[in-house]
Image (cartoon, rainbow, N blue to C red; front, side, top):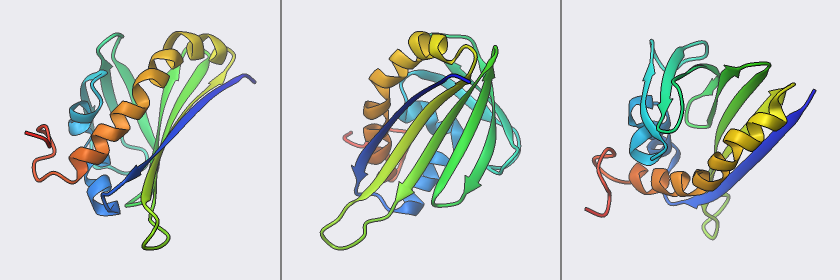
Length: 151
């Protein structure tokens, strides 16, 4: 089986509940990820829930929440031709007063066409993943998470 992987980790000042408030509200994902037009999710933010998202430069994509650990992590999976696309989102609390909390986002393509999708889609994801995470971290501390925190 072929695999393509990429991950980014950024330090955050937000606590787990602030980050979780952003992650667990998929309709707000386009506020911090400018590559998304919209996201919907049927039911609550629980394992097995299904949704759809529309990237600005691509067709709508169906996804499923395959793992949900409130205030810690979640993973969602999209199925592409002969390939699966897994996004992981992980919160690591600060270990001490001199340490910062961190968020890590991972992207993995698995399957026969993983190298092709890694090249076609993965390049764009690599370019925008860190800026999206930085925006998420800034908005997580804002009162209104759908607006620019600097405004």
